[in-house]
Length: 385
Image 1: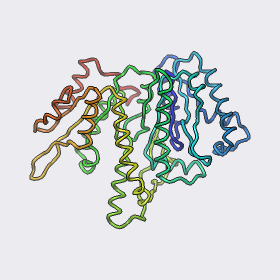
Image 2: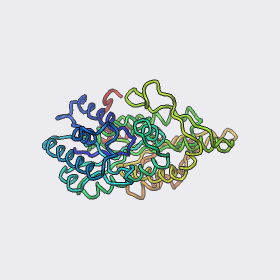
Image 3: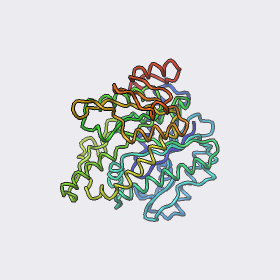
Image 4: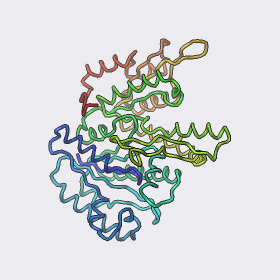
């Protein structure tokens, strides 16, 4: 497969995509997977430009450097089975907003896939200021991400036969495996795992049950896990601080890990974000969650939802069915996806669940056995995860 991978500035895509290609080598993928980093190729063409300053060049020269890099990719990748082109769809820099592609070269490359990588916005913001001399707010980063997703999707629509996916770098799911499978194992079933999130954060037993569920699905399917971008938790913390009258204080976020290293280095301090700045993007967080999760469902073949049993008032257990999970199930059903529900509560599900589900299971083990019997499971124990 020929994949073009985009993502806003601050995503640090190069080590992530190198890891994806390394996995192709570890699995003995025929022909491996070649990685072309357009930014590096542009710097190789412009020996006079200091690192980190290429976007400060006049747009006319930027366009010339980019076209030269893409020309080399088109030529050298001819006949290769699997390639990844690491680039951007847009830039929002001192020049303002401008595109980072030319339709004629994108078409000549004949890509099968367009993947837009996303990550938690406070992590992107931290990387951006760590690597560049630029003053950008969390709000700026939210806008850039939305623009990058939209532009990448439009690019895909302009290339007949290509497919578009949003993939998170992730804190939970090993998403290098997700990207590898999209490129090298495209026939695998694609699954959206659905589960309650915000109202179970203080329930460790339920969280473990959910994490085990997510891990089992990720082992055998291409999964698009909504929990891999969890900015709602950051917002909840900011709201709690604001209610205490502490809007000018800071929140600390654990450094994002990838491949054993942390953002800012192995001994990096926690990422710090101001409460007031998080509150400023409250609407963006909610709106993008709503948009992104539905898009993740749309790009999946099926949804598998875990409904745990939660402790209720008076010792009466209740179904852990959040409004978000209900909307996800309804959206999947209305868009003709296969809908599977693992219903753990003793109380039977309502007709709003039973009438819109392809099948209902009483345990994750029962669901996985069914998927295996139907020949839906993919590779097992891939890469030792």
